[in-house]
Image (cartoon, rainbow, N blue to C red; front, side):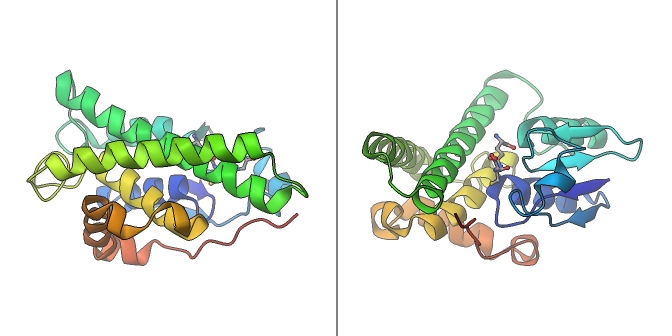
Length: 209
Ligand SMILES: N[C@@H](CCC(=O)N[C@@H](CS)C(=O)NCC(=O)O)C(=O)O
């Protein structure tokens, strides 16, 4: 398998971390969505990452769909998410909030670095969405007494949240002050201390206009 995309993307990073934790070997092509758009396009016409190219040439897109495939590969016993029921729905919701937060953090970053003049209404909307999701995730994480969101073992929700917190903190430090979100800050610190998070990491390099 070939994973396309740089690890400063929270979406690429969450997929790479899952691949490593599942022990699935992969090649990494750290192509930039802007600088290497023409190389990505044959695999994904959206020119977005992560894109995972399977051994038979099939290309999977969207981190959620890619992880769904990886879960299928390793089977329900090893999948880092409940197979069904309320626990699965809850984990998927946490993942969806983390992914939506990532989408908004990316949009806001592009607005800041690619536009000559920012749209006030769009910036304010993104900031409200980012802060709103952080507040909900903080509340939820503060209620959890176990080391990870759904017990003693790390899951997709933990990884998705930790990856997007790092991205948000680097892209928009003013929006993620650790003192306002102590449970999330602790979650982030615990995940980032794990060897797999330390191995799969890249300081954010924003595109330039
Ligand atoms: N929902 C997608 C988001 C992927 C995404 O936004 N990737 C960014 C990099 S962080 C990208 O490809 N940006 C280029 C673009 O959207 O044109 C996922 O979960 O995979």
